[in-house]
Amino acid sequence: MSTPYLNRRNEIETYFDRTAVKAWERLTSDAPVSGVRARVRAGRDEMRATLLSYLPQDLRGVTILDAGCGTGALAVAAAERGAKVTAIDLSPQLVAVARERLPKHLDVTFLSGDMLDPSMGKFDYVVAMDSIIHYPTKDMISIIEALSRMANKAMIFSYPPRTLPLAILWGVGKLFPRGDKSPAIEPQPPKKLRKALAKIANIKLGRSYRVATGFYISEAQELVRA
Ligand SMILES: C[S@@+](CC[C@H](N)C(=O)[O-])C[C@H]1O[C@@H](n2cnc3c(N)ncnc32)[C@H](O)[C@@H]1O
Image 1 (cartoon, rainbow, N blue to C red):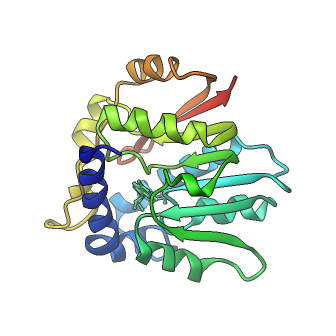
Image 2 (image 1 turned 90 degrees about the vertical axis):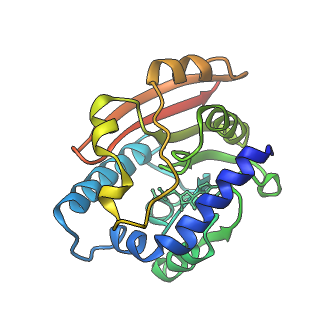
């Protein structure tokens, strides 16, 4: 792991484990939120549904890694469909929220740590929703490549596409109070990113879909094992 990766990872951990824990906990709950955040929440609900729709409907016995699980919504939805889910996040505090929110009838292995930790082994599917958005292009591609190697069938993720509206609207400064600034979000030009990903050995590009709710713009991308 390179020093720039580790430095950025530390900033992300500090942000999600300290600065923004409460705001993130609220955004990912049913508690009322202001108009901007409500639209972000709606966009994120649509993105989660999109990523989950790229998985088989019947997930009984299927192993899934929720990489950068935050408060665990995607992990829970996959477990509801029968998947054996491991969910990991850098932020122990968000993982604690995820554990608390886990419905009693479900079993998900929640871990706090790095989603690239090789000791977790391999999974049928690896899903990373909005969890690589703070890494610069080079690291983002390396992370996607590493996660795709951990997936026997497909790796599915979302990222911020570089579009003009995104540049204007998606300052997390708009989502969270002043002073709660997140590490920079690193939008990627989709064509360029796809071209780089197409070079990864033994994977091919699958479906993609853009969610744009005004204040949340994010692109789903599926990478299928060739
Ligand atoms: C924008 S949040 C998204 C959380 C969740 N996937 C969701 O959609 O609600 C990004 C999450 O990725 C996590 N994250 C970023 N880099 C990570 C890494 N290297 N290992 C584990 N988690 C990471 C952060 O701690 C944060 O909780």
